[in-house]
Length: 367
Image 1 (cartoon, rainbow, N blue to C red):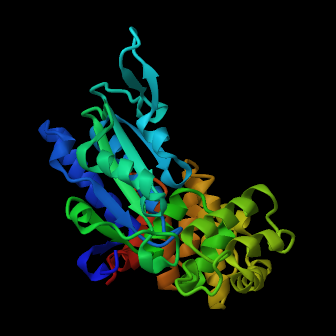
Image 2: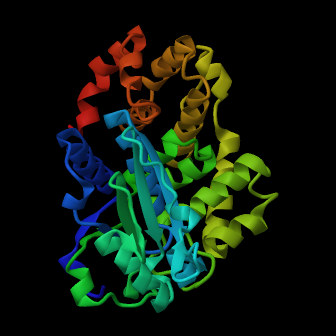
Image 3: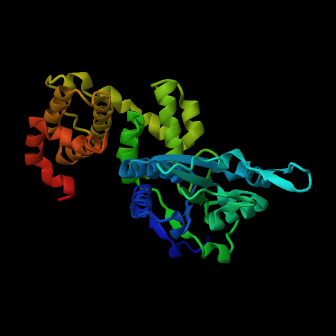
């Protein structure tokens, strides 16, 4: 797709909300998923398209009470026979029948919703694309028909993304619902807080949001995207919490330039007050430097996420937050409320949060 102006641009959050609302409406009305055109998600590598589909599946479960199963098919790794199945002789050896591929062996129960996610559609060999188009448009492949409880979503990179991509035929494109998925720090941050992204990554990207996605990277290999930052987070969480120790791996994910910036910024963590003392209600100083404040917010978020049910500790941290600059205090409370869908209700039960709302509550709505 060259003409991006003809597509609606959405971040991952808005895309998730749109899909969840549409599919929930169909389920509640008792209608068929065939009534909704199959969705095609376009966007640069690593922007969060596949992650957004999983978020939509999770929210669809919450909204409808049904079990949602996502079958993720990476089309670049498939041959046409992988989709259509293997031919075999029938019982009397007079006709050929096609054995159904395992990826289409879906639970057809009424309390289940299947999502068939055809990823990397635009980069697949054209013979595979032809088979995938039949699935997207007609919900069939050869002799096999998708069950009625199956949703089909496809995704791919745009021709302009400097990735392997073939332009979609206009006749086919006109039968799909297209979204242009764009990077958004606010959308990513809500997901990152909920999913335990490493505090150093969270703090650095809060400090400089432009580092989330390198749209004009000169490197075709290692560059910053939401996906590659998630990789850095995993390295810090599982290999070593010291960025300097695993710097070659970090720069191998996000590039040397971003790696050096990240490593330099991480040194501000040595200047932070004692996080354990803050959550124990002990008096601690408030940093003056902006970069240290961002680091503090990410560290408090990470600690709070590990003590969600200890409302005494959470209350002590809210009390400390009242002494922070208003914009940082508000970011921290927004992070807290992103832990769980109903976590704000839990916060409302502690007196410190009520006092915080009196002082800063207007800022939650951007006032």
